Image (cartoon, rainbow, N blue to C red):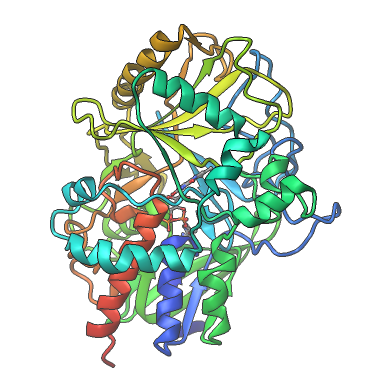
Length: 503
Ligand code: FAD
């Protein structure tokens, strides 16, 4: 097979991959990005690029015949999920034994499907998680750089107080305040100017039309509109889509060799390609990057990788839950899909929780207050490689999740007590399930900064091999993670381009 070579290759086009591609390109380095998902720029038969959460079709999920939405049921009825055609859809749910992980697939990775919440972690917690990283530099340079390039903005507080679209948030704020808890606005990458025009009826609706986890047709500043658009604009970046890297090895001259499978829209492998590069950047996300490195170590293609590759993984303490409101406390049939507020009890060192007030945009009044709680769960798990099947296993157990649930329960028991309310029992498949603790939106770790890599994401044992994505974060960051991932990638790229790019 012909080997396609480039000075630099980036695997994955999520936050870590997009930052690497842009900064390499701006340094004049020709860069090839390999992304297993498709490019989302072509309208389907309905004239839209993405489908909505209310009428999911083949575009919704990655090679499935039925959707697997986070909410299994509503009023115990199986009305949420739908049969769909198999296709390289934009949202994947990766199943491990006792935890499943949602990830975005496509040019832009998680930015295509996420809630856009762009939160900078509390400095003290960042310093606790990254004791060897200069926090002054992060908060003075790299967090601001990341927020600017991501297009972070905030909802206009006056509009927030008056619009029907955030009534659900104001109701949850009132209930939190009644329990003596603090709430805080959180910024977002969704263009709030566009959202106000949606509400006024002068722009096409997206956040106000139930669009989010299967993609937004308007308003969202996903990476394909920010970092990746700028990267492509340099003329130094090429993106290959529907190509999944499955193996990494090293040639005798120290360059890297990749094997990638190109699939068609049915998922069939139509070509196996070989690539070569001098500099290799891993941006496949916590799951993608960890799997590649673990396989490389265990199959002996990169035998000197550190023993800590595969370790230090966590869910960012994610738990989802719903509360049942009183009949007079209506949350509104109209709900924006972009969260703008959190209940912030992170300062409570004995029970750290940051709970995002989440929408449940069914188009009907349902009296549900929904939350995605990020808890300070200290449990961590490791991935292992099964030599027989070539599969990666995750050691996270239900007992690990129970720690997150206990923390979330402590906070929401307080809110329920103060408001004489109860939990909702009809949302997660069976009436005994009040807390959805079997999935996470925030997979973090596996190649932790300063352990599997040096303090800048350089992979130990292998020069010119770097990690720039969420696998660097040691299992928890206390807030929604993409701003942190982006800022750390900016820090890595600044360092690497200054120190390592000598020919
Ligand atoms: P990713 O963004 O996951 O990018 C990895 C990319 O690499 C993907 O495109 C993948 O297809 C590709 N890839 C992986 N392996 C390979 C391979 N072997 N070959 C080729 N390509 C590969 N975070 C927030 O901060 N705020 C939010 O509001 C928020 N909401 C979320 C809502 C949902 C539904 C989900 C799923 C996530 C949400 N997150 C949110 C989390 C956030 O999206 C992730 O933390 C972030 O995308 C991780 O960035 P990353 O660069 O590590 O990897």
